[in-house]
Image (tube, rainbow, N blue to C red; front, top):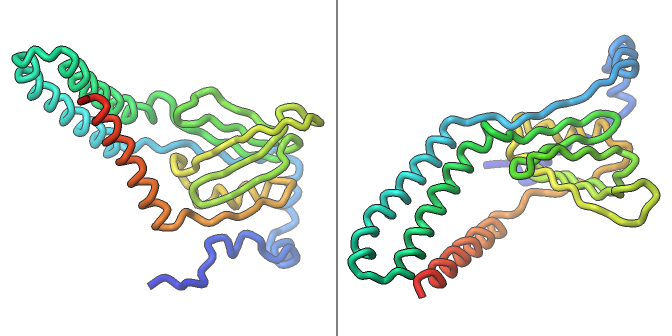
Length: 214
């Protein structure tokens, strides 16, 4: 049974004096002279692609099974809605499975700032540390509030879902290492919150199906 007092970020803010004594002087000099950076790239899981293909095959099978009865009923609106729904879900499942191979998510953190390419927004976003005003870290999501133009009051939001990235256990520590501002540590959503989100998602799917049928 896990210890309730366990803090996954307990070792992030260590004792600066002990850390300085533990690191050799040569290593510190090399890091200060070089342009060190950390790279995190989304890993490709063949099992996820296989599951998406299985899901797509199931919906294609349903579309084929319902085609003949709906065609004989000559209810063209119902035929278009049901078949369109099954084919759309099958196509979406295939695209989700292929996405890590086509546009993998990538994150680069350095002393200059952040470079991030999201899983469903392949254009890379670059944010310098001078632009960042607030930084929130959690085991599943990084949130950065930044100014698009330094000196302006307008704020933009940069969301980095690190669940897509490999070696994500190190990402929070890397941000704290390079960020000039102190990050705010957030905890993961509680189990009840996850259940509520899942139920809300299922309710939306049922509502869409009801709209398509009627």
